[in-house]
Image (cartoon, rainbow, N blue to C red; front, side, top):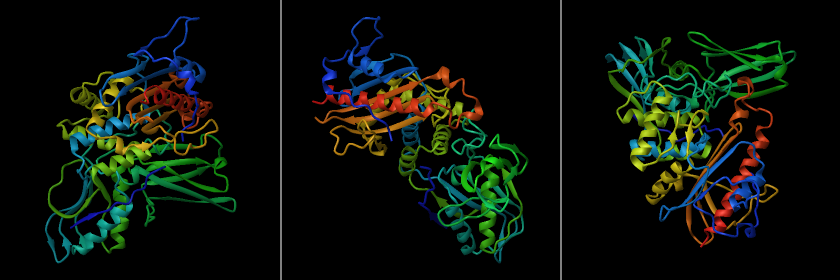
Length: 492
C-alpha cells in the first residue's frame, strides 16, 4: 500500500541602495584590485566604499551565454557563503539522485501475520525523507489498519540508519534554535517540536507537541520545566529517552510558542507514530531505535514528493535540515558512508570540482550554517553558468525583489533577478542570475563577512546579537547596488 502526501510545514526582503547610472561610466576591468590611497576608484570600489561595511567583500559576475568572467573583486579570497550554499547542494542532489527521486518511509513486519496479529516486530523504516510530517505518519497509520493489522505481539522499532546521526547541524549555535536540529535517517516535522505556553493565574499551562496541518499529537520524548529565573531563557539536558528542557519564567510573559530542535529523531518519530497507531486501534510497545538494516514484509510505503519539488522548497524557505539530508543522501548514493556532515560536504566539494571544474569551494556542511565553510565567488559562478546552460537551476530559485531607497518594492524593475540569499550574523551572501533590460543573462555571487567581529559573539547570544541586523541590512544594500551596476554596464 503506497501513499503520497504533499503537505509541508516550512518555516518562513532585502534592503537596497540605488546608485545612479551615471556613476557607472567606464567599463570595469576583469579583476578589480585594491588601489593605493589617492588613486582613482573604480565604480565597484566606490560602491563598496559607500556601503561602509566593516569586514570583507568579494564578488564575481560572468556572462551566462559565453561563460566569460566580466568582473571580479577579492580574487581567490573565500568567505562563508551562508545559505547561498544551498544552490550548490540542490545541484548536487539533483545530479546524483535525479530530479524524479522520491524518498520512501516504510512500515515493515518482521514476522508472520495471522488473523490481523503480527507475531513479530513492526518497524518504522526511515528512508531519509526530509519533509516527512505528522500528516504523513497519520496516513501511514490509517493504511496499516486498512491492510488488516490489528495487533503487534513483538517490539515496535524505528530504523534511523539510512543516514548518519548528527546531534546538531552546527554545534556552535545556541541549544534552543530550531534551525540547527539533529539529523538521522528519519526526520519528522524538520526535527522540531512545538512548545507552547499560556498563563493560568500565577502558573503556566505548557504543551509539547508534533503539530502539522491536521494533527496535534502530544509527545513524551520532549519535556519542558519552568524555572524561576530570568536567564538563560532556555537550557537543555539530554537523557537516555528524553530531550529535557527548562525555560526561564521571567521570559514567558502571558503566553507564546516556538519550535525547539529535536535531538532524538528516531524516538520523536516513534513517539508520534505510536499515538497515531493507537487512534487506529493498534497498540504498540515502547519505541526501540535501531540502526540495523531491517528485513521483512513491507506493509505500507509513504513516498515523498519528487526531489525537484523538495529542493525548490528548500531554496525558497532555506530549510537547513532539508539541505543536509538531501546532501547526505547524495553522498550515500555516490557509494560513500559519511559519519559527519564535514565528510559528506567534502564529497560534494569533490563533485563540484569533477563536474564543473570549480575551484575554491570548501564546504563543511550542505546548508551553509557552519561558518567554517569557504567559497570563492568565481568558483560558484562557474557552477552557476554551467547549470544555466543546461537550464537546471534558475527556475528553482526565488525571485529577488529590487527595492528603492526606502525599502519599497520597485514594480516592473527592468532587471530581473532569481537568486539564493544567505544570512548569518555578520555574514551575508547572494548568488544567482540576473537578466538585464536588454536581455543579457549574467551569473553572479556576492559574499560579505566580518569574521573577526562574529568570532567575539558568545554562543548563547548568537540568535540575535547586537548590531547584526543593521550590518546585514547594509550588506543587502551593497548587493543591490552591485546588481544595478551590472545591469547598467552589461545591459545590451
